[in-house]
Amino acid sequence: MINHMADVIECPHCKWKISNVHDYLEVGDMAGEFELNCESCKKPFKVDFYSVFYFATEKI
Ligand SMILES: [Zn+2]
Image (tube, rainbow, N blue to C red; front, side):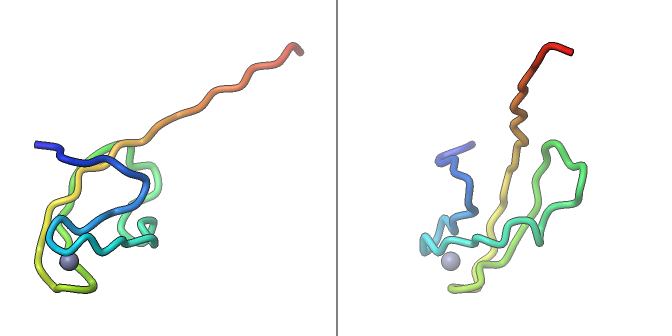
């Protein structure tokens, strides 16, 4: 169940924000989930992630 979505990973225990999310993602991953131990309170939690694409077009 998703309680909160953001562009940073936020620990559900202590609300610590992990900004270096790219350290945890594989290049090319579109979506998935992984488990992480909080850098601050050291408790484990699960992260679901999704990629969002933006498209721009122009005449050629
Ligand atoms: Zn925490």
